[in-house]
Length: 314
Length: 206
Image 1 (cartoon, chains in turn purple, green):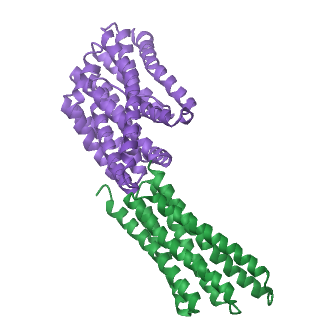
Image 2 (image 1 turned 90 degrees about the vertical axis):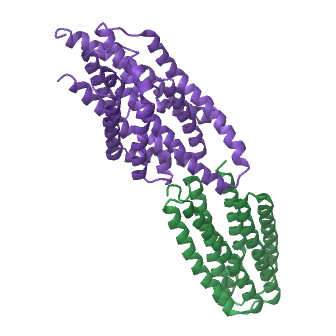
Image 3 (image 1 turned 120 degrees about the vertical axis):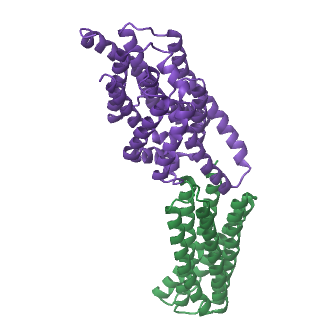
């Protein structure tokens, strides 16, 4: 019976990732009319599954095996709190990273139940949260400069047609990362605990993510896509591409990093090239606060629930 | 088919056809006022209708999702301005046909000069669009458009000064002649505007 709590929580997290993060992959392409929303969602489903099966194990191992010695209480509490925080944050439109919520909950639960928390792995993860947006920032600067040099020599309609293809390529990379990193972070604990095999987890996770994307993401995708592309497709591409490559590298290293934060890093990189004034400092501040608060909040919540509510029963 | 390149090619083909329609309309208008040829002037009105249909086709292809928004917006504005050139040429043709008096030969000669330069500008506009498409030297074509527009401005001012010395048979005669000259003079402004949009298109992906 107890395994139902982490299982349902994982399903809810996967659904939530689908409803919110589809925009990261295909927002610009849908907004630009390069691909229809329906095609984007089907493509997302296929790529998320491929990502989860081919490379998901790296991140699953880090989150589920190398961070905290799991037991069913830690698993249930951490995934329940993560799912709760992620759903509330999505509902209230707060910029919360699912990775940070899950890692914070796992460490908080492990700490509260007196389990072994591997500090070296935790430090590596936190380090990757800092380094990944910075690497996306630097990569975005390089990509933007390269595009300027290459595209300057080409006719405008050729540039446009290349850019359309590159935007789809971007979507493919980010959709793949969603499966290999984002979904893998949510599935890691239940796979490593042995509730599901990696393949079963990939199938169930992808299905739920796809359902979330299909049922709830259309408005988010259109808002993000049209919002970004109406500003500048060229910069949008550079930022997204840099983020996609950056997340792909960290996925290979088995580190659970946020695509959204990497995209923000990329946008800041392009913004710096265009002049610091183009970066919205208030938005940046809000994201930085969320970056610090989310893992601390889930850590604190798990500790509090474990110590105050659950300790008499465990 | 994810990339829809056929849609983009179709829009470019339609834009070129639109520009050729402007060229034909300028040619017909020039012939029409040179020879007082009503058939040529009527043809200008027919070409305006063809232009309207082309603009609608371009708009619908763009609405279906041809090009990314950064290019789409400017291409639609371009087709609107090109259509305005045709609208203005139609106004010129109708106003010329409706003139209650025969134009003074000197005034007519000024008008033919303007029509000739308009024709050359419409050729330059086609060249500018082709340069945009092939990454040839766009500056050359747009500079020619601007220079010719300045020539027309000068001719227009000379014509106005000349007209001020003339007697007018009555208010309505004066008004219709004046409307005709204003319309004729604004064709070059619109061609220059279209040339400017081509330049904006050129930098829109930079």
